[in-house]
Image (tube, protein in one colour):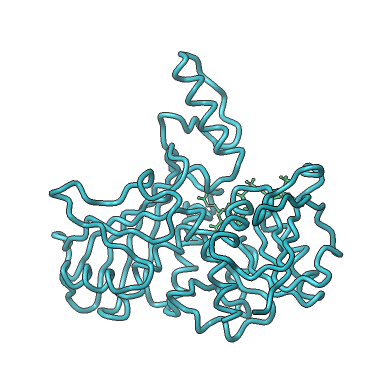
Length: 333
Ligand code: NAP
Ligand code: 3JN
């Protein structure tokens, strides 16, 4: 079997580390792993398939002989270095928002729109984590009953904001439990024993950039700009796992049983829906796993043709690393 040289840009970050462990767990055919980060990480090592590999400082020359470059070091790094990697002949899978809405760049969740990979020109974008898990649920419903409108509220874990954010929740919780207060640094407000209705910065229309990403990316992945989406994104004091309350209005009536049936047949979606017996997904239960979980499926009492459901996934896996590795797998298949 052919093996590939794979560069991971942002290898010391929360997403980069998850990419490396996902490549290992899924036995992606890697002949050489090239972990790249900033000068701050000089002297650090990552472990891959039992081997300790020194982290290298990212430069324009880092991509010589690289087949796949998986980027998760922020939009400005992708802006500068993805074109360099493409020049060197690498296929880039970008986890940042930088290229997502570019018309020439496919934005892909393999279970939903793998066909879009065919038109890539060296760059494939990975969606925002909150979008990725939501489209896994929307796709089979859209195919069956045509979605007109989606109203989503997210409950996003701190790992979505990176390693410093995870430390902040841990430290702040300890300080608060010891009876003191701690100034927020990563987040705008205290995240311990609290929640924050702001992810990313606000735009002129009152939505945050995270909310606009969910709206625009959903339409692009489902290839239907007529689907109306509105979102409210909230940061909650959970380490891993994003949750979403999703209200879906369809053109034709679809029952809760039909939705359960459609979702249980969709690849990598798991229906956990027996509320009377305490069965519904929570982030703590599913962290570290690959599927997108759905529960609390019910018909909306307030509108015609409405479905309410609760969707939970590991944001570092389906929301980022797993989806990126699935894209690479689809490309070599
Ligand atoms: P993180 O834990 O803070 O890690 C950031 C990584 O980027 C580190 O490896 C860091 O290296 C590296 N980096 C920062 N500046 C760099 C530079 N100038 N040159 C080279 N490497 C640099 O953040 P994260 O949570 O992993 O997220 C990283 C990025 O991934 C985000 O900014 C976002 O664009 C994307 N992301 C996407 C999703 C998604 O939904 N698809 C989710 C989360 C994040 P050092 O350790 O050396 O600083
Ligand atoms: O906050 C989350 O839960 C997800 C965050 C994703 C993120 C964080 C910083 C920059 C992104 C993203 O993937 O959209 C970006 C970005 O690349 O814009």
